[in-house]
Image (cartoon, rainbow, N blue to C red; front, side):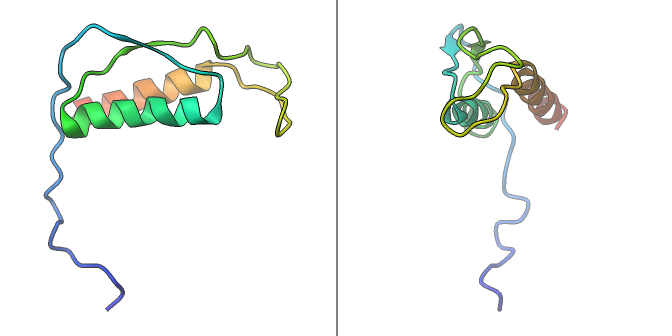
Length: 92
């Protein structure tokens, strides 16, 4: 064998997220971006709420990134990713 089986195949169910009014303010960090994705996935797989995301702390596109270098992409790619993933999961 190669270390896995198919016993769990087809067992993942996508749930409707819980309806609740909350806001998640995304920190301007890689960890913040990952946390936002986790929140969306938890909503659809665990039935938790999808908050309104507040992107106000994310630096604008073109600003330098201190720490590991590079140029910030701004919040647009993150917004697009979160919207696209929600659309895909809602369609299932």
